[in-house]
Length: 114
Image (cartoon, rainbow, N blue to C red; front, side, top):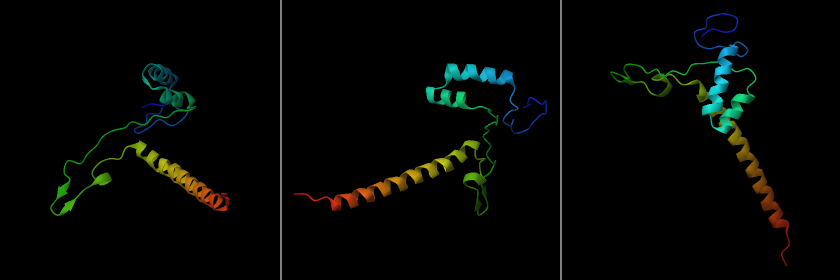
């Protein structure tokens, strides 16, 4: 992969270095193939970067009494980091719901029903 600066890179092309030709091609692909939410995400990305996603597994997972599992046996993909931010967002949402529920319970106790 080569950036605008002509530098050959092994693993990724950083933001601001993706060629105009590739960006034009990707715009066409986004318009033709992506669902509207993903198309909007692509269009909103000011300086995209490139990073290939590859699958790589070890040839053996069992060695006598040792066993390789999970990330030790397979290369985690870059998008797995998104699950961490998703967890944080959901945790914040859960905290908000708990606070709102507690407030509701307090208000309910204060309400006089005749």
